[in-house]
Length: 176
Image 1 (cartoon, rainbow, N blue to C red):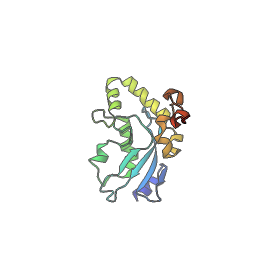
Image 2 (cartoon, one colour):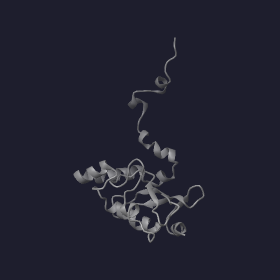
Image 3 (cartoon, rainbow, N blue to C red):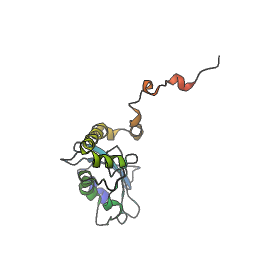
Image 4 (cartoon, rainbow, N blue to C red):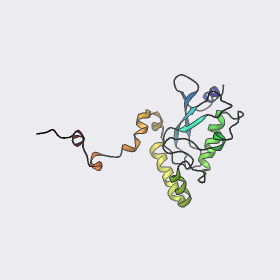
């Protein structure tokens, strides 16, 4: 029922393996925030005991935020991880909890130490890095690519010249 309610709202929901326990939701950064204009694919996994047990929520494409693990996309949000209640639903997550997380990061409880440190030491540089990540990773085309492409984003700027190797060197040399 909860998943259907989310599907009937303005959110684009893509089920995985034809079930309702695992799906992706298109999430847009909140207006008047550093994340405005960004589009993320959020992976939601519902446990068998849902709604009595909280869902697992993670960002699939990259986001620079103190409370989101840069590698896994896992979210550090008390209301989801510790104080979940069956009275909450998926719409609460996408209309209240995630927008609040992006609007009010908590650098004192980080999953991304680099983002938290930068936010506390140099807010202007932090803001710039958030915007750079939005430009690079949080566009509509980033969430429609396959997951293999998303995992190799770090390597796409590296050329053979920069690494000092070429395919010939990797293959080795034949004995004369």
